[in-house]
Length: 525
Image (cartoon, rainbow, N blue to C red; front, side):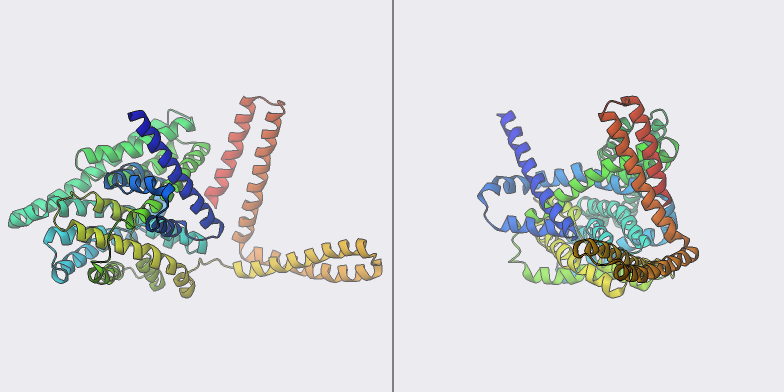
């Protein structure tokens, strides 16, 4: 019987993966943010009675299943993947805005929502501050997918990703303290306040120590192996091991996995990983993160439809603007003293502070007898749905309206010259084609070809002058061309291997040399 149940669970999981992959593929094809598409389709599947999918809906929307899948199965992978590829240099360059938002901003949002829901919604203290902690967690996945499709400045993407990595850890700590310890601390008066502060420091510090120790230990381990499949396994053990170990001693698993992955990706990548290993580890976690994100957002859409939002519409109408006001205070307040951060970027960070799967998973983890659980559930789901759909869909137009695009010197001029050059070269190709088909005489075709050729020569001179002024443009084209030639070299080695002209050992050696060259180009870029 147990085997049958496990077989059935596997079937349901595979169906979920197929649906998520299909929606993600279509969204990417049309260059739309796939998380938002998944939430909307998930909600539609949940609303309509589709007999084939009913067992899937019932299985996924079980609170325990949803909570396990999101927090224990997917959260370490998503956090680890993001932190693994975040260079220390980017973190260091943007430490002021990142840590101001992640710490000061999160506390501001937490306090505003907590006290406001106590006063306006008449919530108890634990209920109010649990909801506040949920609404202080941001989800960068949707925002970053929009950023990639629009092409905003790299620094802005780094700040919102860095904020979310540390903000999530802080929000989870505040959630646990608010849900299980806050009342006892308040009852104890000033000594209770001290105990609360100490508990916060203990949870965060222990998470840092566990993550730092394991990250350092696994980084040293990579020095003794040059075997990327094994090192990928090391990374899996590190991410899940640091998370579960920290949680087992009541520390912050989120902070532990973020710190461990940061150290492993930066220090470990420098001292113990070959370029081939780095590329393969990054590729592995790219796939894992895409799969996890696709499933997470589809599950959020399915889960939202299980909540009865009708009876609480007045609270919902009040909760959404409250969350937006708190986010605004957090962003503009915490970045007030950082003058180097443009105002337009603050607008994007404010509206782009989306709520996501972490908020949903945390609220489902509350004990069923927790006071006000149903109210928190309804409000949290409503704000998450509004955030992902309304804010998510309007973020791209807002970015376009504000003109928040990367500062690429000479790129507009270069694109104009390339467009003209391509037009004229295509015209000459067409002249030769028509000449053969319609027997156009040489004097006629030569005159027109010469006219176009003169224009092409002028454009090439202008492009050379532009390359002299902006060398980065030429380097970018050189990198693109070099990467394509390296891919061709890789295929050439594959062909020799298939034809049994070279051995597997020679092919592996040549593949590694080519991969190393590709990684060096990407690092320079």
